[in-house]
Image (cartoon, rainbow, N blue to C red):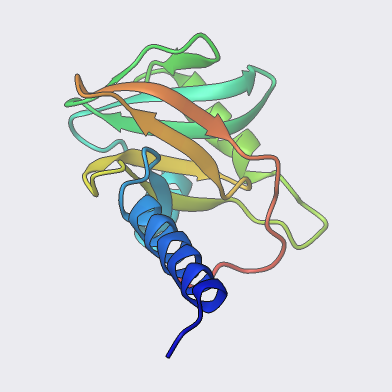
Length: 156
């Protein structure tokens, strides 16, 4: 028979585990999912239908390029639209593609997935993590690149 202290510890432990697991399922943040096909589409300058493209960073040194599905709205001041019909589209991709030249860092493509598991768009960068937050009106209210740059080859 459990004494009071053991019973209390068991309840606290169980509650902590339950809270942690429910928090994982009910996260308000989305994620990036590695996708080799997205990498290839950027490297060959393919424009996905029904997507609007944006970049983040200076025009001379962008750090991330995204293509957002038309069902979502990206209206954050740090993200600048790209005219996919212009030479600037290829130039921006080329600059991002050169990130990490001379070392092991290689830009990679990802699907942007919302917290409910829905496809939101695509991501291309050597930065391989981001805070992705979308409100109930399908507005992207946070698309913040992480500070970590992965080193080595992406396998997926």
